[in-house]
Length: 179
Image 1: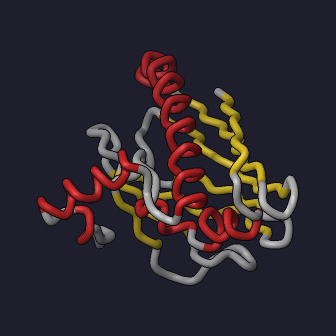
Image 2 (image 1 turned 180 degrees about the horizontal axis):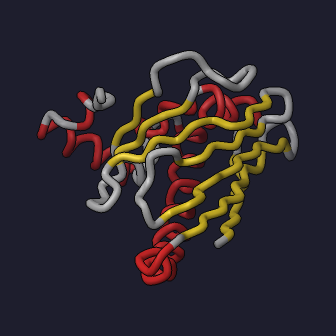
């Protein structure tokens, strides 16, 4: 499965790239699809990358946490690619590339190109459901990103999620599980 989408954001490309690329591990601060996130400990394996990757809470029972490692990072072209490492068994590949392109000094276009390959009977059965869910989540992530960069605060939907988590005392304390 291949998924692509983009959005124009009323903000300079550098401001958008700061959120997507330089603060890669902080997606849980602004994306509703990711209740919480944390950096993978250790040094980045890709030149220029700010972190090696991230662990994201998903809120999905079959994959409550997903580990994503940066496999390509280019600060000058505002592009990064990451792959899911610890993922459900029915996924063989889950890779995403993000790019931020300036339109002018005050506007930029953010695009992502994702590739997801399933395996086995469960992967075949889950494929269509995943495609629908990933398309929806992708649109929501772009909308959340635009709101966050343009307004400096999370979207209402994300803020409500953060408020619920704070009342429960859960998401703010998200830490990597140690083996």
